[in-house]
Length: 133
Image (cartoon, rainbow, N blue to C red):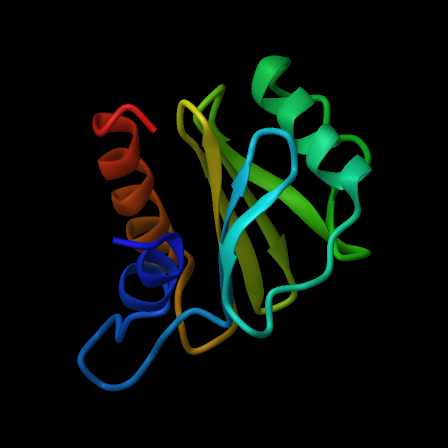
């Protein structure tokens, strides 16, 4: 299965059977190289991925400044140190799950809930981690 298929079928899927889906999603290598992404995933800067990776290694480093992706600032909220970073911006937000080789991103807007985004992103991230990726 191609990386794009993972994004299209597993991250950008119909979440609730009523046509709700994430606003954008991507799978990005730890080095910041995009493996696959949805058409509307923001163009991010290498330093944004570097800052995200640093927060996985040293949890809490993003909290004072916020998490930036594509120049958009998210307030960092509860996550799982070293495994998941969650951010909030207005009525939407972001979930990032770290696997052995990649970062799985999901960005949501209402009416998708934070919990739905977390479930979609973390389920794929757990699957990839189980595959050694």
